[in-house]
Image (cartoon, rainbow, N blue to C red):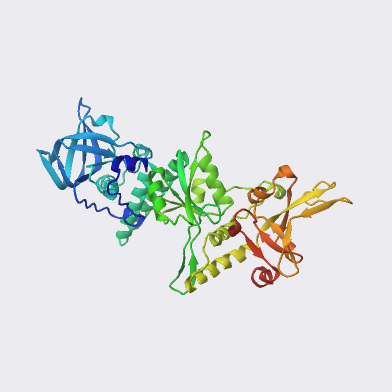
Length: 466
């Protein structure tokens, strides 16, 4: 919020919500003006620049102006002079609610591009944001018909491209009846280009902000369960939500701070911090994709980080992971206790997904060995020598049964049982332990992210029927 604080101080800081920001921008200033830059032109042998677009409100020749780029991270607000105004190629003293060209004195010293907003101090934050979105739509969709080259994308920020993509999807939805094969192919091509450009820019960003669940200590899983027309329930694939630095301060206000927070993920000196973070969230936690700024503008996980391939790796060397199970553990863990019948129904559906994956999973059982063990055979099996003992981590279970600790992957096991203290792990399915012990899965500092399975639950919901 640094840029916004510098710009507006204690002024009206009405924010643009995700709902109105994704649609057609309608700027409605009470006083002052906002001008949405659709394009920028040089003047021969001059440091001045001409910007064209639509002014909301009233601007006068000679006005002092603010120049800001709401979608650009770390953008400074510049102050300039509107040295001339032109409407239909005619110089005018004032322009109000019309298309206009503005000559900016020494504009070459400012960051001016499609999406830049020229405005007065009286403009609210919402006005500036809506003018910014309007400029992207005018400049790239209305004027240029999205005929863009790589140089155009290079000039855009992640936020610019996401907002433009959102506008384009809304445009396609509005014009859904126009669905010739050629047009559908073109729309798919444009959407794929947008997605690739966003992935590239996100991975190269200095930092991103990821929505985190306070209950699980992990990235929040954004998913929806709804009733289909045939009466069945559908659960959308759980995804992450990331926002850019430019929007991080505002977007925090959209989520309950008692349940969620935004984690800053930096790329670091090696430039791979974001890539590694996303890879872990996809292939350990089970996130299926990433919502970029908007929860429903989702890009598939594999476009950011390719799925690991273990085709030629011996089975004993393949790391133990359970992303198909972990996503449902985290989904359930981040929810508050259900408050009504509808929430109880959704929770029951999520448990159905969870139980299905529990039956397919292989778990790590933390253990300590005392004594010598033989070398593993080709399948990873070992024969214990006489006198060797194995210690497991146990707790009191239900009734007269004990419960053993299990983990879905090495990351979570190592949080509690470091290798430096002699802890190792044995691979077991749930069925291999439940006959003797109840099972507590993922005992960490965030108990909501785990689950307790007793023998009755296993027999009723998990054991695969012949």
